[in-house]
Image: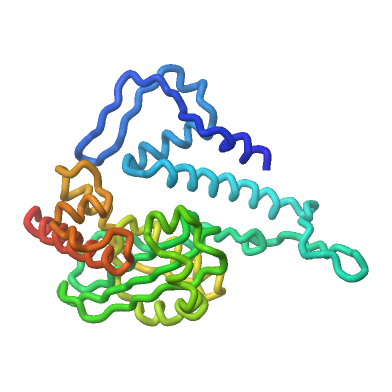
Length: 295
């Protein structure tokens, strides 16, 4: 796709003249005052919007989100335009090519937004399940879950856990292994997501889910359900990233690895799904207690 190549073929930073950059401690919204904002392209404006919405968002996360948004625009155009056909399949013995009209997001391997909705819970509760995934990348459409951990807590006491590697349909990229340490050897004998998902959903039941940067894990969970054609259900989730921004204003950022040091949990390994669950549970407990004090 030409737009894709043109946009990301060159790694260049957008140089925006900034008169003032102010970080408000209350809601951590970055205010950017720019000269001549009318000269910015729509994608440059979208980058700034995403930075404003989430100052801690990584550059790769911003890039991935923009790519997904552009894919959706193209998908909408294809689905709505009945004249467009996409060639599918290999030539058969008579050298004819099978053609199939694209009629749904599933044909394009894109999960519709309506299937990624979950309830964001504000009321903090003492009974919950902490959920964490390790994945092959940041896109819930094209990347896959390779490790699952879910830990049930009752009155903040650990009761049971669900932990497993997951064998992806493709090899794990080197970049992913560099981050989470999970290699192709680790998952070669692991069950597939098709086998794991029903067991995970049975474990989760209708309990409140707690996760750090919950939108990431919830999108991967709901996307996996959509791809495996499991009936959609609306989960309830609490995001410790948002909670930590509200209750912890003296760390350099709110990444889980940074907060792990703040909580003196450095003996736990970052980007290990189970260890990240333990850190998230302690972080949630800290925020829960801070919330009780403030209220």
